[in-house]
Length: 207
Image (tube, rainbow, N blue to C red; front, side, top):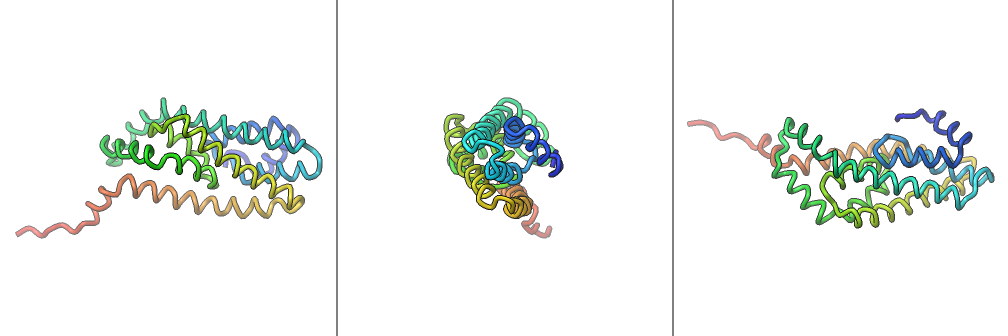
């Protein structure tokens, strides 16, 4: 986590709208800032009347959408060069990259939407979609839908639970670690499945 929990809470309390916007923007680009803490705490501040509910929610959603677009553009224009340069060291071939592009074209809409509903993974979704050349209009549409649902759920939960907002934050923050690990494993297995199969396949004994 780039900021400690106490730092995040202090920043939001002191700077309110600006802090919410900056944190959610950076989280949506790629940085590991827990939206599952920022958003419920935003809901709590709405509940105690410190910030306006409409402005607070719009602030978080707008920042997330803009951050997702920036992440997408980074992946589109910069990420793939870095990706191809270093991935070849791990056995990733250009042909497999082409398969990744086809996969994103086929399932990219679902990927862009559902990853925005997952802790931790949502931060890198834009980078991946951009690197594999997803249509930007579809990315914005589907990822924004995911952002609205995720933000609305966590802000409302923080508002509803009020002083107990930390309970939902702790649950999602803990779950996010396991979800991130499973997602990375799934992605690596998908990309390198042929390489893995060739390693696991028993070699024929020489005669």
